[in-house]
Amino acid sequence: MLKQRIFIGLSVNNWISGIEDIQHQLDTILKKYPINIQWQKPESLHLTLIFVGEVDLTTTQQIYDILSSNITQNFYHSFMLKAEKLFLLNHRHLVLNVVSPKLLEIQKKIQDVLAQENIIQPEYNFHAHITIGKIVDIKNSEQHIILETIEKTKNMIIQWPKIKISDINLYESHPKKKYVCLKNFQLI
Image (cartoon, rainbow, N blue to C red):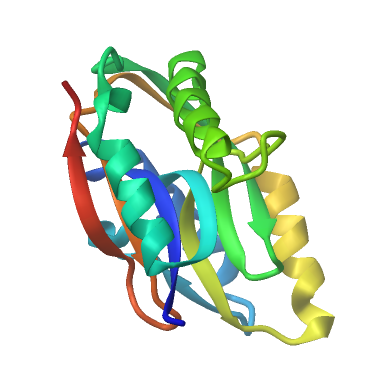
């Protein structure tokens, strides 16, 4: 049975500058070490709201139907957003934790519907984040460099005073490829 790695997220195209600044700062710090980091290109940057995981095509269609329904009604179109705390996910991905009370409301609403449909577990607790880079090659002896750099930069905060959210996207993640937006859902 054909499977897809699915997640739900937001495009960051209109508030990308702070993210590129952090990528540049980290690149400046890390380029003196033998660490190969592949930075996410601006067109691939997105905020992951909910990672669903590997699902069959029927479940992908079910998620599509849920997002097509009235779930996107009454979402906030603009709100403050803050990226704080850089961390390493799965020993390979450099990610920024993203926080906002309004973003959490959007995330919770979608999670609740997905849990009701048994697509995700009811106690699912996913932290919204932006993956800014992937460690392509690193020796075990150099892992501490990444961790020390993250520790030095963990208080780096980006704050967007008022971002506009116009849509939510259903993405598919391809190994060794960029993320593919399967469907864009305009907020009502």
